[in-house]
Image (tube, rainbow, N blue to C red; front, side, top):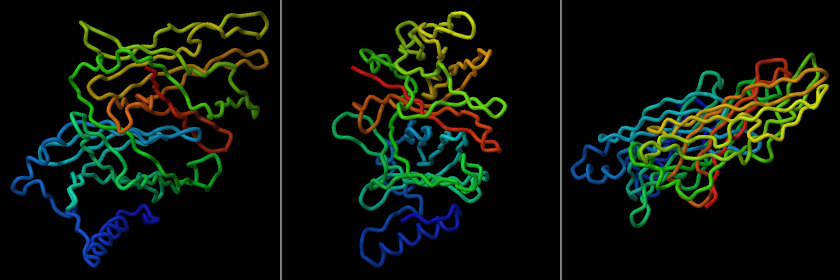
Length: 335
């Protein structure tokens, strides 16, 4: 069981406890406490793992998906960056770990100041599939990541905080290969989790739901330059609402949510925005919402239809303190 504390001290104590238990039981002892990659013959074992990986920590109806960008160098040093689904940035360094059973994994740990002792902690295993497939990432022994915050303002209920278990999906990402061959034949679109609540606008104490904001099923397509994929574009251009008189509007135009998307090809990170439209009393207005995430063309289940994932945030002043709802953003595909 993971320790119920964000303190790095207790995390280390827990890890040492696992080592001690393996010593007593006679089970193989992990080599996680020293750098094995300088040992004779270790370079040949390390070589297939060197490179760049993209991964997501999937969310759902209650909150969005965090994302990770992981680089393994020739010395077995691992650099991890990314963001959690509440917008908290990650940046950490660790070592690739090889245990006596031959498993290779990394420790992901961060304890942001704003979490008041909370943390993100998990073990991500690198797996070489049979045949010619690329490396993918999965939870070590199926144990989920733990994401916890003691910040009293972390949710819309003051003092509640949160304690969540997260999955992991992702794998090898080639920064230079032409991804068009992978996406060719796939029907791509953007989506938000179907169970997500509408973002609400608060005006002088009254809450209003948007008339139009859902961008689900808006088509996406690879951007090509000289036959090479350089990005992903939204197919239908932004459409505008049509006035029907008074404060009544028609939102039947394609892409009325004005979804846009930009992709940094070398990292797989995508960003963009869309609009939520509100009609109330005599007001017709829109609010722009930004999202971000990462592509995962390699993952354990390449047929799951989820090509990338991320999050967007919506400010809500109603609790009486700064708070933002987190939503899941999905790039999905159909053959």
